[in-house]
Image: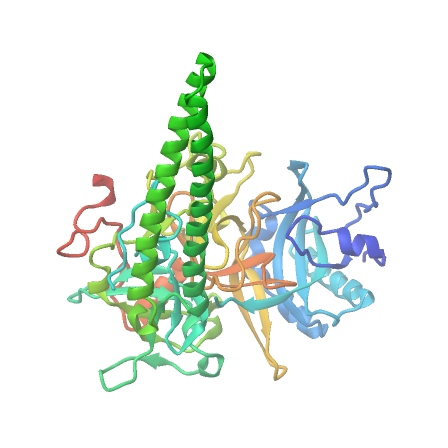
Amino acid sequence: MTEFRIPSIDEATSYYSGISPDPPMLLYRTGKIPWTMPTGPEAYRELSEMRGVFGHRINDVWKTLGHEGELLDQQKVLWSSIDVVRFCKSKNTSVLGPVVLWIGVLPDTLTCKEAFNSANGLLELLQRHDITDVDVEYREFVYRRSVGPPLLKWLYHELYPTADYVGPLTAVLGLPIASSTMPHLQGNLGFYLADGGQSEDLLAVTARHVLFPPNEASADYTYTNNDMPRKDVILLGLKGYRDLVKSIKYKMDELGRFVDTCKEEIQQLAERVAGDDEKNVREAETSLKKVREESDWAKKSIGELRDLFNKIRMGWRETSNRVIGHVIHSPAITFGADPYGFTKDYAVIKIDKDRFRKSFMGNVLHIGTKISPSDFIHKMHPKTHNQARVEYYGDRLIPLQNIISEDMMRSPDTVDHNGEPCLFVVKNGPATDFTIGRATGIFSHVREYFPNQTFHTSMEWSILPYGKAGGLFSADGDSGSVIVDGCGRFGGLLTGGAGKTISSDISYATPIWWLLAVIQENGFPDAHLYPTKLCDPDRIGIREASER
């Protein structure tokens, strides 16, 4: 039994500093390493980061262990998540702390003494499996489910003024979607499937709760004939559309002010060019040429942005013009689905192929415009020796193929900057855009509570933030996003996250190795991940990406 010790207010509020913008409060911990408050004129909170757990004894017995939730229930602990992580200090990430069985509990439901008694029960359970080097920690944690004309052809280059704005209107993964009956809630289109067999239908998968209201969560849905009301899926919810239009207008205004500034500067430089000082004239001529080129570029950019702005306002303003398909199958949300205990939360969408025909390239993921290609490669592949790497194109697209297996999730073939086993993953979602995270090697137990005092428990693939400089991996509105690794392999479908606020300290996903099998067993026996292809104007997909 561990010694009972109540964390000080400073320790409780500062212990997890750095793991997220709004880190949880420590309730209790069994670790024997003392925590001390930094003192002196340069005192500050020591920042921490989270890491996954690989190659530990607990990885081997986690499936058979599986009684933590039952024990917590017997202890009447209102737990929301059971995660296994390690922590390190941001100033020295090469030194990892002990493995931590990290218990999230509902706010204001557990005293420090109750956490102490509960932790000793968990330690005894671990000891029965010959595990004596794991700490138990409790924090307040609430699990939540996240919600937020022909498509345009993908075209990217830093010099294209519309590059930052066309993404949501193309067919690359990262598309913000909503139900036509719930346009105020927005999520993400996850990935594309080919129906297979004799069918040529193009399908897509997202999280069910993105498109169905909570009061329909327990009813299976299958679209069988044209006499049924369709559940149409639209590109961009209400907020997504407004934000896109507003951002383009703001950029045009910004460039307009820049052109006005250039006009004044050109006038001043022209006066210098007319002067008598030969050196001053040469310098002014060089500057004048540069300013005129910048002004011309800004004017050209304004014109292209205005064309895009008008195209969006005229062709996409009405939600009826943004319909890209309709749901054809979505089983009731099932928590703890057999045999693995994952959450069955998906919807299959039949895509309007005519709208995608001129822009479709298959499963390709856009890495966004906020990270440079070199930074992306460095973060995803810190140790390049003998490690597989993604085929990355200059147009900022990652072609996706293959699936991260269960074994690969538990024992990745990649390492981090310190040479430790690590599985870096990425996603592109409407709420947080393109982000990088770290997948854990142990599936988490998650519990979601409802207003009627009931709850559901499930197993989830958990994703941690990349680190101090990486920011959060997801937030409300990112549900349905596909999560992939640095080799372009499909990992999971983002379904939710947990934390104190709408952002998520930990994000949760359903593994695609399991989800695809479930989809195939429930009406789509020949369905398979759509191959990455380039678009041909006459029919979807002709050339493989490797032929580019």
